[in-house]
Length: 393
Ligand code: A3P
Ligand code: MG
Ligand code: MG
Image (cartoon, rainbow, N blue to C red):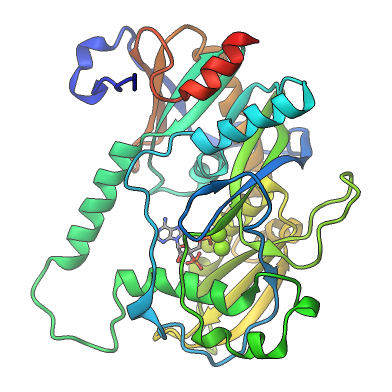
């Protein structure tokens, strides 16, 4: 029978402990050389197909082939097939893949933490993002801490954001003001213009030339699961990868040539300090997201305010922190890494007992709070398939 999550938000009396706090400031305690980190190694992968159904294969891998400059990223908006999770995905696809990996190899996948890459991106970037906010749930099971997003809180925030976006005095339809939905579309349109389902060598020129007419959908995905480490904490992270710039090497010791695609507004001809600051703040997110899965290249499509693709820049992920250090120095990659290492150690010291813990950072709060919200069990963080398999040992 499906287990129901207790609506902990509305049952504060369930809290058995006062929150335990991890202040973000002062950052001076995270400065200096970065904590020992390991290059992420892929241990497993999975895909979602065109119906967003799980597949334990590499069918969702795409290949990069530079797009045509001048394309209008608004084209095809009317036929966008937009996938959004309606139900809480928990860690299910990640755990499902780990279970079949263990069944296949006969070896137990062991780490201090298992979570989605997105949770770690939020943690890593928090020191340099005043507006960072997150709500997560964590549970300790057999020596591993599993962390998931608090889906309901996130969904409520999204609904509030989109309500705020459509409120206000009625505006006449204005072609100079692309809305939120259109701006989200641009990111996926850029992917469709830049990727192929096979290598460029194995793709016909016709297919490549017709990419601007191809329908845009974000249903299909490919996710890489890696083992990595921050200081004294080992992690298993799962996350979406946009595609490959070259075929995957058969030697598992070599890095995988993944690419992360991003769009950004082009800089003005003579950028002011504030323009560069805005862009370099964006680079923090691009870098952290790619760094965590070991994605070696970030490809940025610069667009006009109206969504016309103007140019492309390719960055080596490892060089982004140095660029920003020599630029506005608005963030420091070593501090991000040391902060994450310190925070994970704090979680190991805090998420020690049974039950479910909530991890919260409020906007401009400056302090991450951890508080027990359920005394026993693992909530819905661990799916029954995983618990049954691990129970059997
Ligand atoms: P951009 O990042 O170019 O804006 P990702 O870059 O992580 O592969 O995601 C692909 C696209 O999904 C993004 O392209 C953006 O359009 C959309 N997207 C991802 N995360 C989003 C978020 N939190 N809010 C709105 N759109 C998002
Ligand atoms: Mg992506
Ligand atoms: Mg992307």
